[in-house]
Image (cartoon, rainbow, N blue to C red; front, side):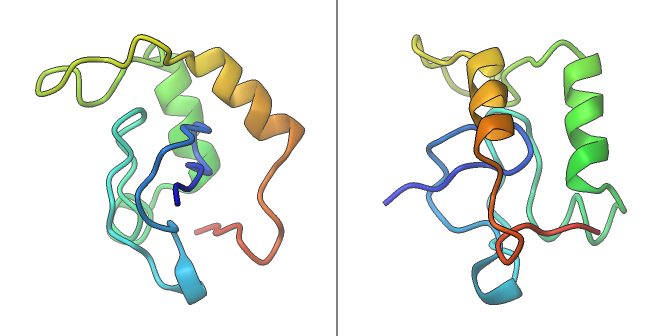
Amino acid sequence: MSYICPVCGYPELEEDPYAGGEPSYEICPACGFQFGFTDEAQGFSLESWRALWIERGMTWAFAATEDVPTDWDPRAHLRDLEASPPDADEAHTS
C-alpha cells in the first residue's frame, strides 16, 4: 500500500505520514518533508513547507541520490491534492 504526501501530493510514500496521530519520520522524496522532524523539530506546517517547496521550483528533493521518476509531475500531484485533500482526521498541522 502507498500513501499520499499531504505536502506535495506525491502518491508513493511507504508509510502513513501520521498513523494514529504519530509521525512516520519518513522523508518524502519529492518535497523533502520529514514527518515528525520538519514539522515538530523545525516548526514548519505542511502549508508553509509546501509554499517553500513551490517557491524553490518544486524540484525532486532526492535528485542528488536517485533518479527522478519519469512519470513524476509535481503540478499534477498538487492539483490532485487540492481536489481531494486528506480527511480532517488524517491531516496534521503544526
